[in-house]
Image 1: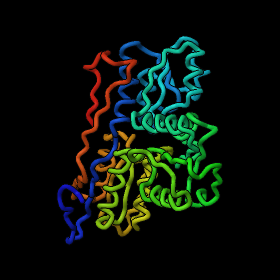
Image 2 (image 1 turned 135 degrees about the vertical axis):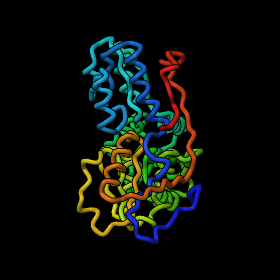
Image 3 (image 1 turned 90 degrees about the vertical axis):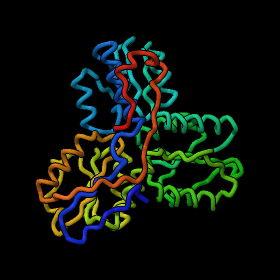
Image 4 (image 1 turned 90 degrees about the horizontal axis):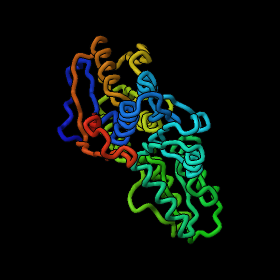
Length: 331
């Protein structure tokens, strides 16, 4: 339930329901600020392995400031400074960083690190692990690397049905942090049905921000005819928001920014919901809202489902360095 009741729109005035929380989570704020602080302290170039977060606008902004984005560490000059993205990396990538004598700053989201540590723990205890996630996602690749011989990826209930494990009494599951709550719940239920002794993480792996943004979409679904999600096409949590809206019978679209909005979507639409994935900058949301207002959606109501006040400290490599530059408040 939202913190305040959602106001209906009986008069048929074109209206925007602006969801909150939306946009940057604490892990994304931390990762972006890590790059900015490193650039301020050391000057460009600072190399970043993969996209620091999955948003094209964020990446371009940081590139203009002097960040150099690379796919693999072999592209980084020996002895240079490199940053690991918020999605985490495998132990093999860390080994490569040491071999190349790179000055590494690790911007992995602490909630992703939690999953890695769980994988290491289960592996040491002799468990076979089932990782629920999306194949080829950066986060999943990094997590699989913690115990590649003891971990199997599943993406669906059907994948669970085909699983063959060596010892059904020594099995555990983990999840990617940015999954659909509903879809993951179905997969976990099937795992528990097939393997009654399966171990689970001590606490849910799906992150607070992913859950909160999905619950906000569910909360407003009965009030809107159309849902617009601001986020990049490679952002897992943003795509899940579209899926949640669609599963609740709301026409839902993912847009990188207002330029991707199709005027045809608004035919017959009175109420439109707007939200953003956890790596989408707030200024893109503001620009989209302004564009909708120019299209006649003059009424605006912010729907807040839950207050977020999550903060993450800087990585050890930057601890104590120019703390005045670092603002972790969710924005």
